[in-house]
Image (tube, rainbow, N blue to C red; front, top):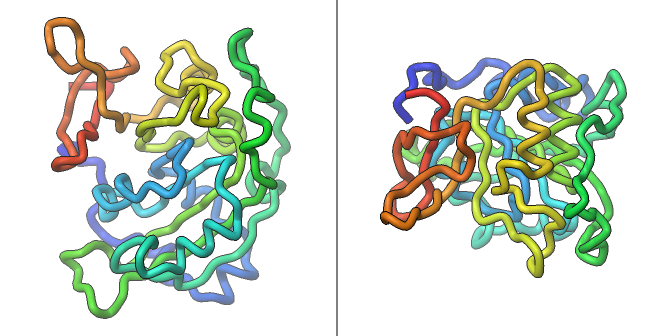
Length: 250
């Protein structure tokens, strides 16, 4: 990342948390949503976390095909979890904690977007908040001491409206990495700049994310361009992953 906005110091709100505070205090919604990374159709992809921790400390991941049991198994797995990190503490999050003022969808699916299309792939809704802490075998060069993970089993577009639009926040980064569409399990194409996710993002009166993560698309002249015209400028790439950072400004 080249923007100076990105955080450089571990945020105090995250560093002072202990198990009692996480489990019993009010959910720090402002800290979790402000300057966050939002990742719909996330599955258990750790690429954004691998490359953005230290710039981003709060990750909001959404996927309605990931069961809570499987998620917790992966978070606590040495093989499938986040390399160099363990679960410091976690808790379930209730819906009214996420939308304390209530919420009703403002942006609805279009005629070609049928949420019932893949009803069989939808798991029981839940939300967990986990604090991930770096293992003592790894030093600061591996990543920050902690990061926050808010994971929702829910629809990615509706969750954006509920979390950000209704609460007056905007994530710093929107991640749309290989969202599985059609036969894969998603009723809508998140890469579509006219799709319900894009319409939900644009409807936020507070603004739009500064950055978009995506592979980009190749034009006929072989030039790479962003999937959404709102983010025309290529900032950098994530190593050999094929993921690029796109910006709304030069």
